[in-house]
Image 1 (cartoon, rainbow, N blue to C red):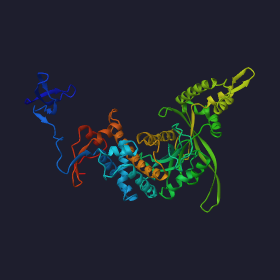
Image 2: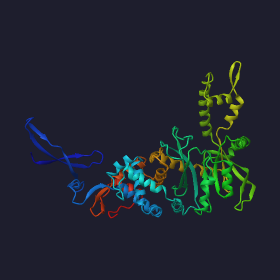
Image 3: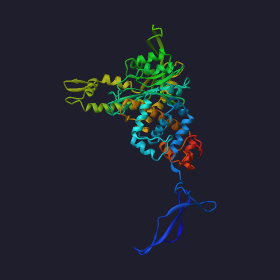
Image 4: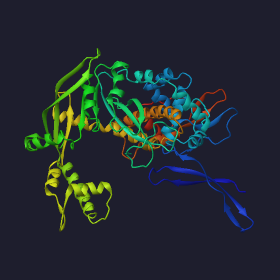
Length: 520
């Protein structure tokens, strides 16, 4: 074996000169000199020209120390402290709050909610506490959490909610289990033929963080706001509740509930209902007047009175009937008109191809009867019905109880409701909770609390990265992967030290406003 010698390689992009150590030896089989595998030992300093050796990180650890990945635990601990989330969870579950954060960290960085995947991820990543994350331990934790009263926790998360607007919406989750009482057949938003569980969430518009959740049966079509939102004023002491809701919650009972409880609200109206269609038809020409066009929202905006008669009972059980004058905000969008017309034409052509079917599906049969008239010569298009439908394309309506808002302001607020749709996307895609992956109602409720905790953390990380205005290539997933690789050593006494983060890790820590310290 010959003496070791150095070889050099220059990176064409960074111009960094890397130094490798190689050894030459004589191979008696081939009768020629061979080179052993090169080993990277450092780089050449651009100023001094000296060789700067790499840290001797791969040497055998000193007794009582073991290297591990600490980044996920470090990031979650710092974010949870900043949001007071750790203290709120500690007040909720003094014995399990750290376990909740540990599982939330797994969901955040590992994405999978499967116990086997979590246990594998835990082998390489440090979590505090150093709990065993096998299937049995996780199920036991979920069952313990299912018996907790979450109301005090929600109250803590809503401490400064009085002046903020809340977004309320629900989504459906799928389940393979036959032992969950909430599993009911419902219409899946994701077109999956499985029993459904609905999940309702309240989102703070100012902090962009979820503050409350509740699960309910999947066959509930019209969600009763009275059941879910009465406690927001009674238990959480919110005096000025202001809601923004999607279409589907615009039933008369829900509007009566909000008016009787003096909630402020903005709610989308379903344009095809018998009360909204005449309203749009009556004001269609006025709405499309050029003076009503708003370049900022790219829509024609108009506001008209919307009287509604409501009936409710006072606390003394006396019946009250009154007429409230709300504001119906009417809008017309050229882009929306084109999209709806293109979709209609496509579906109409598809429907024409089924006219000769001997026994069409029930839904198709109803549409054929609606749009076509059968004659002795065949089918003819019902032009009046088609024309009436096309006339409504491009229009939509939003109901508001805040009469001081203009139609433009109402539309801007309603469009910002997309924030809660992004939250549901995080739950289903980023946290891999489209399917619940639990066996019974106890483990479901416990897991929902851990998922909700991970949702708060992820929403806060997304918000901080967005405000930092990082390049487009710096996606959330890339940031989490890089941060998770922050490593260090755990000592025998339970303390640990971090290795100095790389430049990219430091950039992400600065973007998240997380200070780096070697003394956690």
